[in-house]
Image (cartoon, rainbow, N blue to C red; front, side, top):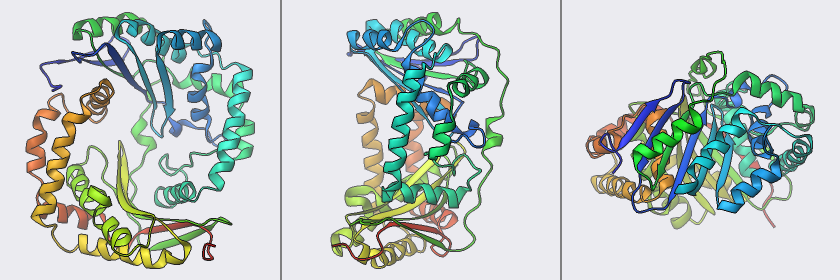
Length: 424
């Protein structure tokens, strides 16, 4: 099991923090990385610029064009993906262990010298336009977007839409992408996590060889200052988004929730599992879907991010059943915030939580993801060793206290999207 005795952590001279772990018995390697240049850096009037840049990184560099990069990757069975979140770009790559130097080299190259070729930029622009049109007709996507706006505010990175308007998509130029790269992309505060079938010392050596020479002057940004603390709603607020000719309505209710480093995090995770995840989507799924047949799906989710999060209750329902489903969900929420969970429920979710950890660590991707979480959220290299003690400390009392602290059934944001009239 990954821990202080077999994880090597080192900060390179250029500001990159590297964590590596040998995963014996495998011939492959996985690299996860993050760079703190996410959507919070989008300029006013150009929402989606950071996401546009992230998606275009693999389309060519000053050294290799798109075809050359594709040939390198496909010829060795290597994969690379880049995603833009509110806080950071996240990279994921997988390869045969012997191809790790090539994978690391390409990750560095696409980040250090992207070309943003006009042809590929225009191709991606068309993809963005198509995605925006699909978003406007997707009830679940629309409820997610509006809920975030109402909860966090449009100026907060967690409240900004993931979808640029048509005007914004058309306004983004290749020069905008080059300027974004020049201003914000570089090795400072990058985290790299590697798990693979090579000795840990060798994994670290390869990271130093491929990434240690990456140098670029960068202004230090106070990322946390872009993510102000958000308060819970002061009252119950409800909105509906009408989308014609939909047979299913998306229902979403919720409020702010604990961030990943919050002391309440584990109480909330285990409590939420009881409320709307464990088994057939917990108490909510059992009551709304299984016993009353009012939803295609129903449950709850906890989204715990670096600078806060949200706790939500969701369902997909026939338009005629929206109010009945919402009432049952709120009934379960009131019970959850007024009564202790029973010992059997809590024991079951504890056992599942601890039992699922070894399974998640059977793959390189699972281990690399763990290393990223350890570093990003300052969990400590001994996090897994402390986990049984942390889980044991969660009690019915602490779950109830956490639920009451974060969830008020009378003060939620509710958004629905779909067709008001009955389906069919």
